[in-house]
Length: 345
Ligand code: GLY
Image 1 (cartoon, rainbow, N blue to C red):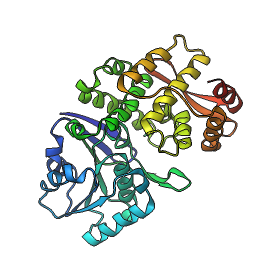
Image 2: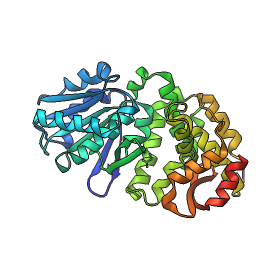
Image 3: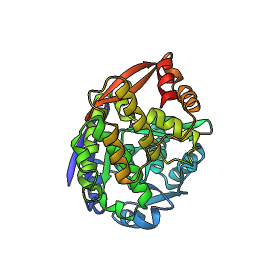
């Protein structure tokens, strides 16, 4: 069992990573919280697998919301349903909300916890690789609007994050592979030794999760509110998000879009003077895990979509470049320079 601490502006997040952590939820919670009640939010995929195992550990009343699985339910009406369930259960600000599930469950539940009665304590128990290495850590919570993803949200740190790699055994293979895009991202932005474990990643999941979460803790501890350093976590996401949007969030999963976006960002890093060409190695690693590398959308539409996402930056776009494996840079690039580059991709 390994422990990491994320020092946020208000309270630290304690993060435990290890096989079997799922059977210590009550004990870990008792070290941090003193709730009279617990409310667990989970989804229709995860509930049959792990809900009873977590629920049975508590000797205080436990209420539950089971949301339908799927990104299309990451919306305000689902949060409203959670608020109603919290009220029906008699939850107060001294009680505890647990998010048990993947990124959608974590983001939604985090937002409900941040806003219900102006803030109730939160424990995240992520059950997908993507949620374990990225979304459950760092306090980004939120919901989608019809106009776009994650447009409403709050920074709200979970006091406790419990990561059990054993739960990945029940994950559908494409969902596990999706999370590997974020793992490879951490290798390029901060710790190239992660990349050595990629070819045999299934044998090294616990070590990979620990390495990625350690980086996330270091980055978020320095820039919790995403005004500087935290932007490096978006390597591959600028063009990736544009591709994801053009595919209506159906043709490409998030991990697939990030994989394609990282290859494009690496080509831009070359164009901006990288000393060695890292593109071939990146493509090999992505292909080894089964992720796509080719951008198949019209380049002009990619640029226009990217620009509409980045309007707030004015004439330049803050782009994350990796010119040396293990080091990311935030480089403002003129929109027109980026336009030319994307048309040539
Ligand atoms: N997923 C990127 C971040 O937490 O900032």
